[in-house]
Length: 128
Image 1 (cartoon, rainbow, N blue to C red):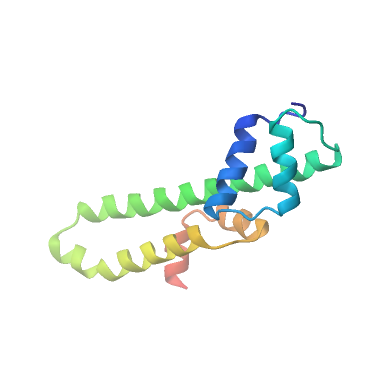
Image 2: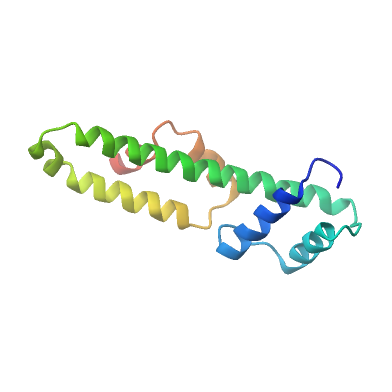
């Protein structure tokens, strides 16, 4: 393969498409399958596939950031008194709902990129 696209990258794209993380056009799926099988594809499609790989990596990065922020918040809550934990139960629930919703949303690449730049995404959205 050329242009730094590995079989693993192609497999990740196909798996993400199957899981619904991203939506690939049927034509692109066919091209990826051909490429995986060692067939040559038109070079103009390389940039499209690279873009999809980058968008998947950014989405995964956002998902990881959301998980880390939520885990950190919950770990911090465990250090509080029982009353403080009860008082923050609503915030825990709302943050978890927002996290899960964002992870399952079909976001545009620019939305993913923008949200990744927020330091604390969940805290910022809960305060809105």
